Every structure is written in C-alpha cells, then in structure tokens.
Length: 392
Image 1 (cartoon, helix red, strand yellow):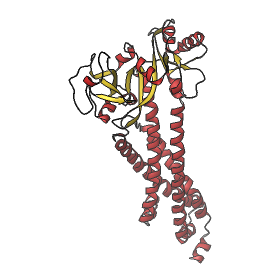
Image 2: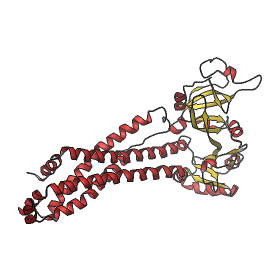
Image 3: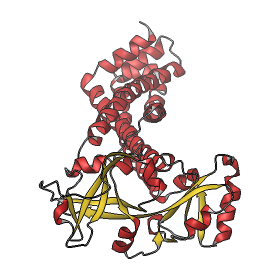
Image 4: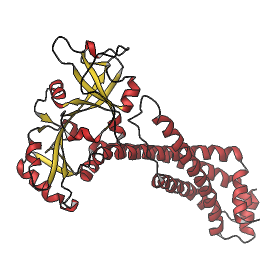
C-alpha cells in the first residue's frame, strides 16, 4: 500500500471523528479568513475615499487622539491652496447623524461646501439644483420642508443609504425634529461614501455647533509635483500653523486608530478560533494514536523508523488542515457575501477576500495541523514494538 493511501485510510477509518474535526477546523479557518477579509475591506474602503478624489495629503489637528473630533479652521484651506505645488484644497466636516423616521442611526455625514470641487467627483444618479413640490410620497414632500420665504434645508444621500432608507429626490427626512429635503442621490467608488450623506458645510457646522471649523482639509497636488516630494509640502503646511498635522494619504489611512483597531480585533478573534481548532486536532490525533498502538508497534517491528511514523501522523493532520482551508475559504467567501447584502450592513460591511487572505488562512490551517500533531507524533514515535504487541 502506498504511503499516501495509508494516510487516507487512517483518516477514513473513523469517519465521524474525522468529520467533526474537519468541521471544527473549517469553522476556525472560515473565521480567520472572514474577519481578515472584513478588516481589509474596511481599510480599502477608507482608502478609496481619498483615491476617488485624487487626494494626496490630509490635514487634521495636531495631537487629536480621535481624528473624528479633529477641528481645523475652515480658513486654513485657503492658506494651504496658495502654497506652491498645491492644486486645490477643501475642508470637510464629519459627523454622525440619524434618519429618525427611517430608524437608521449613526449615519456618516460629510459637510461639504456647495461650490466645492469635491462634489464634482461623485456620480450623481439624481440631482436637483432647486427644490420643487412635485413629490408627495410617504417620506414627505419638498412643499412642506420650508415655511414662508425660508428655503428648505437640503442634503444628499449615498446610493446605498437611499436604497436602505427607501428615499428618493424630493422627499423629506427628519433630523433633530427638523425637515430636510433630499436634493440628490450620489454614487462613489468608496462603499463607505455610498452609505453616507452630504450636507452643505454651513448646515452641518450649525447642527454640530462647529461654526468655521472642519474635520479635515483634503489637498491635491499639482500634476507637475513628484509625489515623492510631497514631504516638502507637508513641511510647508506645518509652517503655516503648528497646530496643523499634515500626512500623505497612505500615512493617514495606515495610522488611523479605527483601522488598527479593526485589524487587531480580527486577529484576536482569529487567535481564539485557531486555538479551539488546534485543541480539536490534538484531541483527534492523540486518540487515533492511542487506538493504533498495536498497529504502530507492528510497523516499527517490520522496519519503520521513527521519522516515518512521525511523518505518517503529521501528514494525516496536515491533510485535515488542507481540506479545512479549502472548505473554510469557500465558506468565508459565501458568508461574507451574504452578510454584505443584508440591508442593515450594506454600504458598511465590505469584505475583501483576495488570494493573499486565502493564503493566510491556508498557512494558519497548516500551522494548526502541525501544532496539533506534535504531541501525538512524539507519542507514536516512542512506541516500542515489543511493548505494543505485549500490551495489545
């Protein structure tokens, strides 16, 4: 009998036990791949925000622990835009609001000036420059949004948020018990932005009591400027005001606390799943060795060296691990795809399970297999032929 056939026969000798171990390993690998894919997708979606607007440098406030609470003077954008090598700069105010009637809470909201170039980068599915009263659906109409000569307050919704809320252009939404008219539906390469909404900068400043302030200033460099020379422009921005903290886009995304926290949580949860999988593998392989003591003794008696016995036990464990990596990777792709389509997380959960993530899952599965095979293999290699035959 071939060595590979012997390994397969040993695994199928106790099909229920092997299947249960395979399921445990598959779930562990699926957890690792899914969580890593979600964390990676979250980071990529965050980076897409800046790539879609061709932003090279992001300016926030120096020393701010949470960048969402950063507060920079709106006027600093004009000062930065006058620097040599800077093509344009624009401030953005970030906040989280809720669509109360639709029971959607914690919606990312961007305050962008009505004439800002940032708006040009969105693909507008529906947009109105003026508000009319030609809608009278469940969400309310533009006719009731304003009173008298007061113009109605306006906002625009990302395409995923609009679908989730069931809103269209011309309808009303309530924010802090005030009506706002939906004057546009936009689409962005960033899934995060597709699940957000945009308000005129002055409106969001008034709501959040941050008049004259923005969270970030996005900076685009001249095409003639080499991206490797961005550091000199960063230094010029710091010279404008010591309270400003400028970073290239890659640095800004890579050092964001939320991105680091998402990755750390994914790894911590994965480690727990891997530990459970390793214990299950150890239990299965150790039980298998104890049940086959006489068989291993016979193999030693007919001339099998210790390293061949160890190779047999390790190979069985690794074969289980490889099967688990295959099934676990497939399960992770299906599960994250299904979750990302759920209305509650659409536009927020963006899994990015690529070949590198699947390879990580395979490597970790093999590591589990090796870890779970160490003690059983050592036990099998220590079996003496005469003792095994006598005890049996």
